[in-house]
Length: 141
Ligand code: DQA
Image 1 (cartoon, helix red, strand yellow):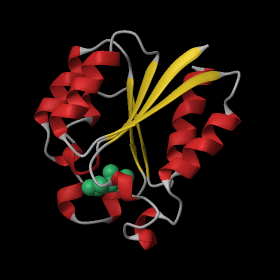
Image 2 (image 1 turned 45 degrees about the vertical axis):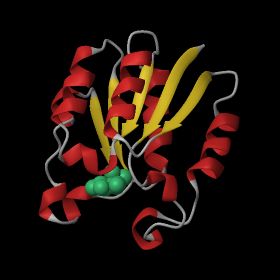
Image 3 (image 1 turned 30 degrees about the vertical axis):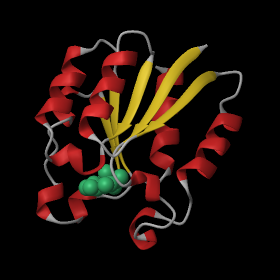
Image 4 (image 1 turned 135 degrees about the vertical axis):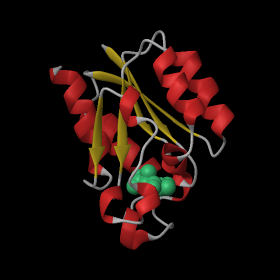
């Protein structure tokens, strides 16, 4: 069974309450239960969230040589963090970059990602369903 980690970065612990017109009304905890049920018997699914850049990096190092895939929404660190980009480049587990909102339809500072260059692929703008699509990719891939 494939071992897949979903990692969410800063402010994504507030999903469901944070700007719901942009990020939706569902909490990630509720959505994660649905994902676990949908992929039970197919994927060993784990979830981790932190608001801290260093803690996210420690997690990527910890699992990045053994997990089959990482699905990462690094939140605003996407646009600022060379450290997280270097961390992704330094591990062997493939990483998919996910954004709930269509960052290209938003402020220009969200248009650039330091992470895309070192990620296997990017899923942007499909709402919270983007995580589901990323898991599907690893199941067929
Ligand atoms: C986000 C987009 C980022 O620009 C923002 O800072 C977030 C969430 C998204 O999922 O749409 O925190 O990554």
